Image (cartoon, rainbow, N blue to C red):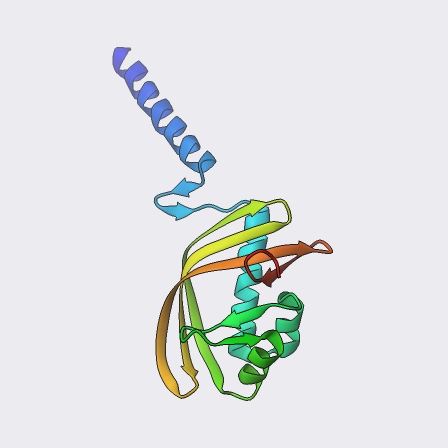
Length: 152
């Protein structure tokens, strides 16, 4: 009888530990996102895929007007300049991966942090480019839009 009680206690302790991990957004080191956080991650994926597909209409729908883009070189472009370089092939994104995403939401602002690797031909420089990304989003008319820090 004591062995059965011990087995039941062990099962309960393991179960409580699993519930604790799920409630604290970690499962073996992988973030578990809430529904709203998942929407933001999917929005970021939509943007990345639109860059690969050169889908400027989709990019316009997921990027807030007035957003600027700053390259590794420090060069800053307007949304329109950046999208034109994607459209004309100067920026030729071929694929992307997103690792260890986490999202924090504060009202109508959100930050997605992740390790992102872009495979691209960027202005003649071909390669895979790893980044530690902090992507900013603002909720506008009930839609999460990519924007600059502070929601420019």
